[in-house]
Image (cartoon, rainbow, N blue to C red; front, side, top):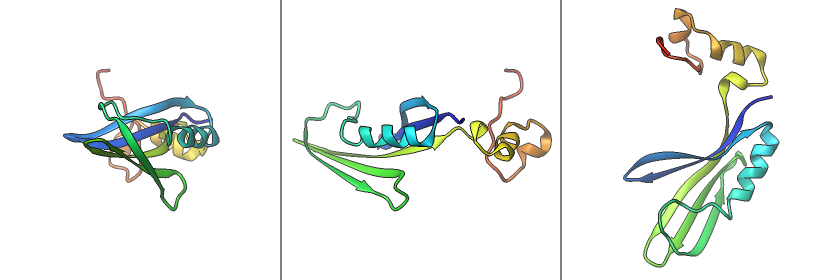
Amino acid sequence: MGEWVVIAEYYSDVHRTEFIRRDLETKEQALTALRAALHTYVPSKNIIEKRRQVYRFADHETYRVVIRGKLSEWDCTLRVAQLVADSADPAVARRAQRQDAAAEVADEPQDRIPPGY
């Protein structure tokens, strides 16, 4: 029901987020794509991989990948995420799509289209 994605987060001069896979229908599909990416994902930097280490976080939905090259080391966090407005929970989806003034100060995650777009 929701739009699930697999993302990579890393630091390269600035913090960056890269979408590895998009438009996955279920969390299970996203987790499968995440696990497939653990051993195949490579950074956009030129790095000649000598060794790869994968660390799993306790939630089993987040991984840290460390790639050691000939001259450098690179690491990133891979995880799954769901578009809030597409949540399977109708109440969460409704709250995320509200555009009234109260929604702007709500303490819950929201998707919003800025006025004028």
